[in-house]
Length: 126
Picture 1: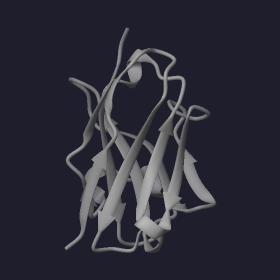
Picture 2: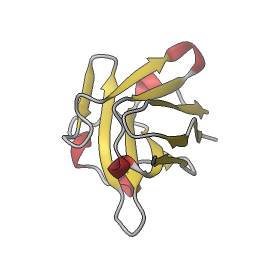
Picture 3: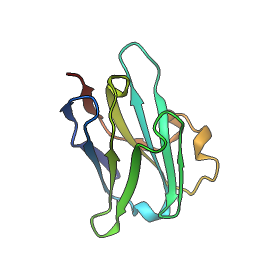
Picture 4: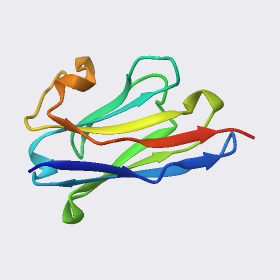
């Protein structure tokens, strides 16, 4: 059975960095689409990026230039490097997996992915 687990969240000061990880079991990540979402208190889920492969990633404006996704195919996992963090980045971050390559992944809602993890809390505060 496919399982998704995020890790690496925590408390960081504004301007700092944090690296999240997403471990996937039961499915080869390079066969599908990866999405990262976040949900701030009182707000809807927000997609921040989606990735089809190592060369095709779509970053949303809110994180473009600050966040970077990388893949570890040997461990079937992905990492989200978050730099220059801002208080508005505070949210629960979710990794999602779609079992097919979906070219227009930037239009997908979280519940249109096949699986997602329980999330990891990121708090940016001084």
